[in-house]
Image (cartoon, rainbow over all chains, first blue to last red; front, side, top):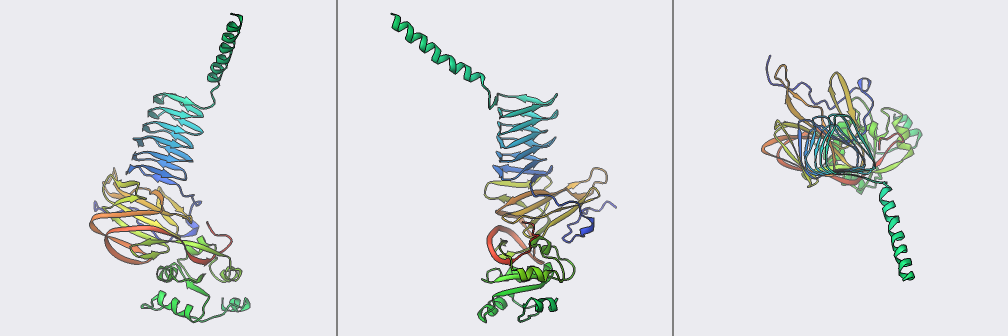
Length: 152
Length: 232
């Protein structure tokens, strides 16, 4: 009864009638899997386990609740429900759900933070124009200086 | 099927495979005699048997899937039965990638039953299971299927990369029985699987015991006649 055996045996053959829709292949790190080292993929990455190393993808990175990434992250888009200890650099949209924990600097274009999400670090967002206003003041000051010099 | 092939003007020598037939020697011999195309007739096992040995031969391969256990044909866009002759007659050729493991090719799948193995991918990261034991399936052309939560799942491999499906063994909370976790998936070009103890490796139906294997992708190795509905 308590004999150690496997429930879901490997099945190399399959019956077309019983299959679900075919999935597109993406990188999946399962809950009982540990990845050590720099980890890069061209497609989407779904993390359910632990990754101790940098993670890089040009597409969507999903960190599920209970999953951990212990290094820097670079992605096209990211949806975080687990923990990330490291800097997060996202080209487009970063979404932190209520169970997300991020300890590191964040850089993105669009940021969505759900109530309850924990974020500790500097946030940098692309497209901010306040900085440009400061830059515009500088030439004005120099013009004033020039005028005062001329008057003298 | 033979009538349809005759209608298309496709004819040639028929060679029947036997247990001790060496496919590479056979194909090389036919190339010397002037053969331009080799058509494999059978199922996934026949396809793997011929191409795991004869992938080095410079010739175009065709495939006529016949009988049960024909999953590779679907990936190649070839219908099972008489319709396969239409695909063969159209002669739409593509260069296919094959898997390479310890000095031999594999076409469909490589399977390592649950063992204490450690995997290094593309010399950049290592993957291990928390429990220690895990099953590994590397797919080249044959789709990978598994069942879990009362559902059947299937992943069709894409050409250009090999896909590794890892399933660690986990303890069930209620019955304390061992069961396989849903797979972790890693597309890769090169991986090294190693262990302190010998582990069984099954490639295209052949089983051997190894301590360390290097698996990589041999790009554009086979000239193959494929169908319009192929999955890559």
